[in-house]
Image (cartoon, rainbow over all chains, first blue to last red; front, side, top):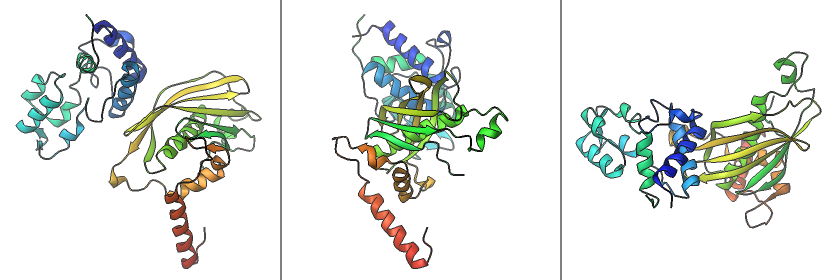
Length: 130
Length: 184
């Protein structure tokens, strides 16, 4: 069972390898898209590396529920509807959606996930020791 | 010019790894254009050859039903030059394969010398608006031309065989060409 520090170290390693960033850039508050320059295809690469590093399975759409953002039931005029926000909260308990909820423009969603969110996501899938 | 950057498969094990060779010849036009009077195999074309070796391996795993595209090269390193007369042996191993795509680890060797090494990520595109990137029978022709069915093994160790749907598609294509008087 890894500790929180070990989880962070493995995630840092995965992001350094997948995104070609420097180790000191991978801090908990860094956003994957805005700060670390991740593009959509990088999420596939990151998911591969997390699955391998932690021996876990990450089904499609679990880390980044793109299906919600392309579902007309949840998106109107380029913004996520209250029902869509509820769905995102249900699907992404690891992410802090407060800021996004103030102006839920779909285009801004990509820049939501931080390294800390990713740590919480992995911690929800592996047993952690303190 | 045909866009083949490998000459032949020498090993192919479904879902695991594939090995192909690329013989570099001074007769190849691009060697004279890349650095005039200093013929070197361009690294980008080595990457393409590695991607073709690994891409067909990934395509075959899903029986050529997915649109497999090179999505990303997380890293690649070249350790020495490759010149006319060299034979490069490309080895690609599937690191991971899932619904959305696959990642391979690839090496290029000149004899016992490691020439290059890379990781390559492929995406499976399943957007129907993309249409077909290749005619199904094209895969069959490529695999035959490259000798994959001569050396290939299925996951259970039996000889690698073409998927039935590709053979059917080839039959239909042949029959259509015959009736229209255009045999390709």
